[in-house]
Length: 253
Ligand SMILES: [Zn+2]
Image (cartoon, rainbow, N blue to C red):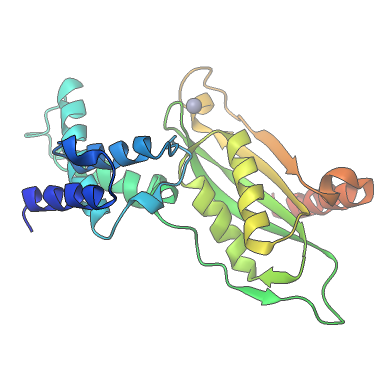
């Protein structure tokens, strides 16, 4: 399919939705998607997931568009893309890295978290605390943010597989975020996937934007916590969560 056919299809798709997109004449996919999100008042900040607005094959087209844009950035930085062998494919590498790795949580749908019933007479009623290693990036400087999350939960009527907690947390982290925002996102998505009101999330992260630039701080460890339901209201639950994660921290550090 030629590019012009692809864009005609995009425009046709917009027209079929029966609104006033007919006058819309953009020639690149990123513009077309941005147009649709604005039309729907859909927020598309660096930490937002926009997978509902992407179709099969869109990512490849967006990577091609971002490659051209990164080529312009490298040209403006006066880096010789033609003769420097190490910079030759950099624009494409950057584009692929953003879409498929460091910001993949914006473009990919939520991980499938199959739930199993937890409603028998001997159902598990204790606290579960999962430790997840996370890699993220700050939306201010696009510098790496890395560390660990402790996700605590008191199971409701269903349970999800243990690895799903980490998958959900990583899906939230693979975007441009602020640590405070990331902590909230993980708590909300775990609540959604498990149906449990009682969730606690604690993050300990180091920030590339403090270590590699600015104040060049050697250890920029920052902690945040979001406590929902019993984790917030019940002092016993709160204490058990922080005691458990302290114990886990002392084992793994
Ligand atoms: Zn930053």
